[in-house]
Image (cartoon, rainbow, N blue to C red; front, side, top):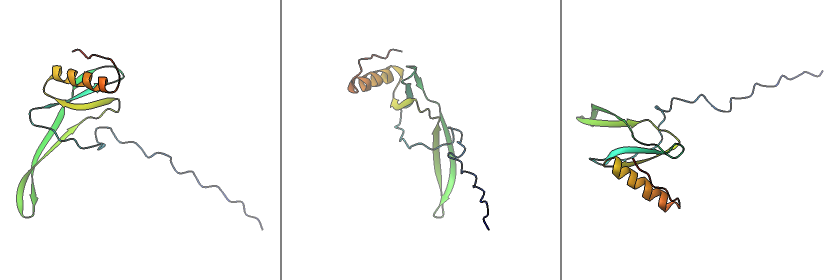
Amino acid sequence: MIEQIQPKEPAPIHAEKKDKKEVHIRKMKLKRGLNLYSYNHKTGDLLEVKIERVMYMEEKSGKMRPVRKDKAQWNPDCMYFQALNLKNAARKVTNMLKQMGFNFKITN
């Protein structure tokens, strides 16, 4: 007796993607006094990134200690770096592009 076997449904190739704001990409240590800037290489925009800061108290080994969490929105088309102000950020991007072999000058 021959039985006909039904094929199984294929497993989904990709799971549902989460919102980009919630995906942890990488850690970056923010230096005191510097702001986070992003350079979009497709559009040429140089913008300051808004950082969401959250502080709360957490108990560790029986003592209450302050904890600070910083979050920023991530865009795959951007390069991120720290700078003092917009003029300094434009200089850093220009130097970075020169090292990569491109002859661009970013102006604000």
